[in-house]
Image (cartoon, rainbow, N blue to C red; front, side, top):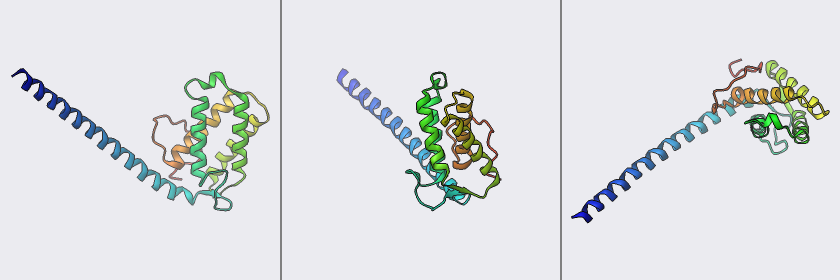
Length: 170
């Protein structure tokens, strides 16, 4: 009799685990699908706003949106979560050089985006020249963050610094 009770309990536990795993998988699949849909919409809309001069790949980036996304993540990794307190200046100089190299290939007629790119360029030039100003790095990070939100429809955060002139709707 006791063995039947253990058997029933085991089946019930396995069933509950299956339901929880199925719910998690369903939720995760739904969220991933939504993100992919949003990314597709954002990419099509922003490709007409800015592109690379030869409409090709530049330094491994297929689009200006990829470039923005990459450097947003780069700054998250190198400066986020307290990294701003222990800056690796040679690494930041290298990042700034890479940004400047790609920016020479970006084309846009959008006046607000042109202003933002000019700001990014100025901050990157300051870091490349050896200026060790944490506020400059913070501003670079915030520009890439907000452009990722506006240009790529990045929605994985509630943070928004409102530093960019470019807005998806303008």
